[in-house]
Length: 152
View 1 (cartoon, rainbow, N blue to C red):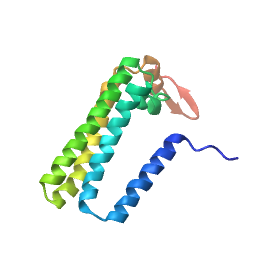
View 2 (view 1 turned 60 degrees about the vertical axis):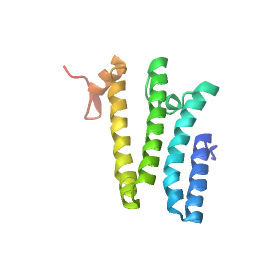
View 3 (view 1 turned 120 degrees about the vertical axis):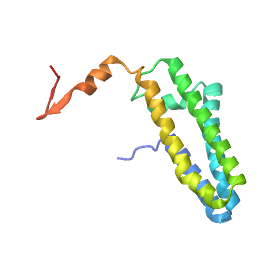
């Protein structure tokens, strides 16, 4: 049975084909440096524009099935991620065009990865206080011998 491929996956596929193809075709250091800035700016723009013009919160679209949060928290989370992507874009631009290639490569591989990890953990800690008590109680349950036992 054939399932329809979701639009989100087509968009991601398209971005990979376009930017991957340009990288292979151009084989240019400047393009590689710009690409990181462009992609982070694109992510920030997508989060802000979809929320402002189409009243769609992309973060909520991706995480809404897993998390139940108040609308104002979804809005703050969406804005925080958009600002984070803009920060990463600006920081990448600054390092890419003010430092040597080796420094930029190390920043891209380790710095941006570290920043993403740090911001993700910070986001989780921020959201922790908004998780419902029911979800917390389910986390406390343990799975023993094929049965769920609540602690006494």
